[in-house]
Image 1 (tube, rainbow, N blue to C red):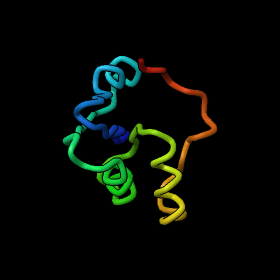
Image 2: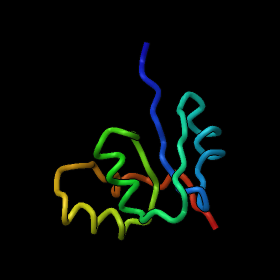
Image 3: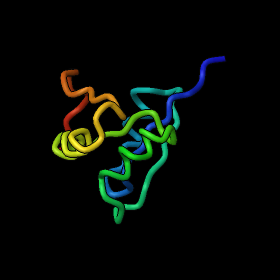
Length: 83
C-alpha cells in the first residue's frame, strides 16, 4: 500500500482545505504561526512532512544555507493563487 503524502502548513495560512480538495488521499499537518517559515523546511528535510507551501524567498534563503537538503519545485506551475 502506498504511503500517504503529508502536507505541512502554518495555521494562519492553513492549506488543509485546498489540499483535501486537490489531493484527497493526502494528510495535512499545521504549525503555529509563531514558528518561522524555515521550521517548515526543517521538518520536510527531517522527514516529518513531505511537502510544504511558503514564499519563495524563504525557500531560497534556506537552500542557500542548506544545499541539497530539500527539493524546491520553483519551476513548477502554480497550483493555486491565494488572495
